[in-house]
Amino acid sequence: MLTNYEILETIEMITHEHLDVRTVTVGISLLDCIGSTTEETAKKVYEKVTRRAEKLVPVCRKMEAEYGIPIVNKRVSVTPVSMIMNGKGEEGVIIAKALDRAAEELGIDFVGGYSALVHKGMSESEKAFINTIPEALSVTNKVCSSVNIGSTKAGLNVDAVKLCGEVIKRASEMTKDRESIACAKFVVFCNAVEDNPFMAGAFHGVGEGDSVINVGVSGPGVVKQALSRLGKDADFSEVAETIKKTAFKITRVGQLIAREASKRLGIEFGIVDLSLAPTPVIGDSVAHILEEMGLERVGGCGTTAALALLNDAVKKGGVMASSSVGGLSGAFIPVSEDIGMIDGVRSGSLTIEKLEAMTAVCSVGLDMIAISGDTSAETISALILDEAAIGMVNSKTTAVRVIPVCGKKAGDNVEFGGLLGRAPIIDLNQSSPKVFVERGGRIPAPMQSLKN
View 1 (cartoon, rainbow, N blue to C red):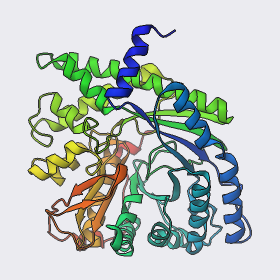
View 2 (view 1 turned 90 degrees about the horizontal axis):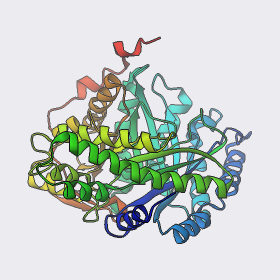
View 3 (view 1 turned 120 degrees about the vertical axis):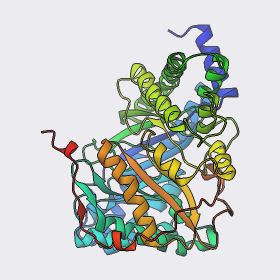
View 4 (view 1 turned 90 degrees about the vertical axis):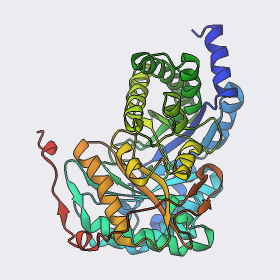
């Protein structure tokens, strides 16, 4: 039973410290939607998504009103679409349009799962499907896409990475009149997880049930305020303990919403993802948590250690609060969506090299990084390979969501709007990795894969 103090504390976290449920995501299997033609498949996909997620938005709005807890996004994730194409990957855009129509009708924010899992190899259909991603993201508003190009067990599929670099460049060009926004809806993974509720990388894994509720809860501002009250004299053991206790409280909010949504929607409860996902709003920054620990500016020496402590403490606190913690739980470090990260890049303290080092200990990887529009496809592919190697060797999920903004160069700024925020164009090393990337093939799995 909640005490009066706990109730008041939760109200304070919501009203003044930006605590919210970042997303309630309904995962839906499309494996029973495969038809004899792509048009028939698209019709079945539209009907199933609209039927299963019909009540998602009204139920979430009712819970917001009853509990006073903001639910920022209502989303759907689906089975990786490449798996239901029946060998006709080149026709994937038809399915993307059906998903977008369903999303518009339901009033949801995004639908994820226009995805392919090619970590060990690519069929011709999968290759054709991946080539449709730029068009699919440029002609739809709410569809998000991902490709898993590697894993600790399989190694890295360099041919798929090379193709993804080309896809990102084409997606940038096809939406150059909209600040290359299609790239913000596409992410390349190593060790992708099947129960991630966050976009752009959410998809409904084949190991999941027919439908499932996954909730992502966030509260960087709550953690920052807790550390502020702790003071500068506390040692790191006290810092870690404070973060753990705060993460516990945040996760309990997510657990409440997840179970209630599951009951009201009649859909199985999956996981609570406790990821500290920042927004451009002042007071809702992961970078500011790190600076509250004593860093003068995020990106300076000590940043990676501070982030490692934060990520670990968040996971430990979440596990104590729920037996169903999953997804990507930890701390996200997207540049454009975090005012502190933006300031770090603008000041020169936070570079692409430091961001890469931070991804070794954060929740995911290089996220919402705006780069010069003339960056080559090979450079983008090499950036993906670097990040994927960190994930492969460390048995963790890593990802790259990078946006080459047409007409922009290092030092310029770009505005994406909404939760996607704004970002300075970050400088990249200009030495060419062309020969390296064009070797192709597969980087073998590391020794860590031999665990059977």
